[in-house]
Length: 288
Image (cartoon, rainbow, N blue to C red):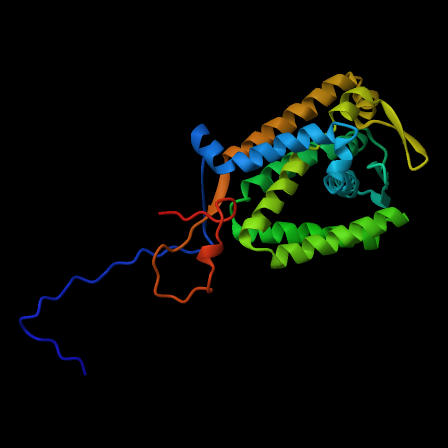
């Protein structure tokens, strides 16, 4: 039983605004907001682009170089599967090279689709992934998902010893990191992987424009751009420029447009202890 004095002033009830933590919103920031929030990411992107295009710099960022090669070759393989083909093997080599050996049905479209998938798919998927870098759940699922996908490719397609050892180590590390790292660090790692994916054409400028064929794993192959020239009769420089522009465009879209997790500012519900203290602007943003 609750007794209330008649002359006591009753205060109006406190209204609490509730939002669903699983909901998302998006907006385009101003340039000032962009630099203020993402200056670490922008500097990291510049560093990745410079170092991965330098002979010595590639080995400073060796894991990112191998990741970039793996994701590029994986998209060639997925493109082959999408047109009814198959992946015979997908190998990664110590010098940072990689090769996806695929079998596809004969046809101009099928050949062009698979040849262009390495650069165009990394740009599109990487740009979309960047848009989710401010969501804690997106960063965790993305990082764990990449790790599991690496392990899956090792089981199904990777057939050389170096590729197996490196990709298994990277896959296990990413899966564990995605599960255990605090929001700050998982957000940073996920953003860097998404940017590396999106900038695949930019981090391979020398190969894209100036290498027409290469010997990888003892097999000599024409470059992706040269293959597109053979198929379409359009000069390979045009294809290289298209892929580079697509990578720049999708990177810009991924940085400017971002989805953010809506969180409750005030709530009587129980929350995980220490959750709010661990938030970082790159992973979770509170919406008013």
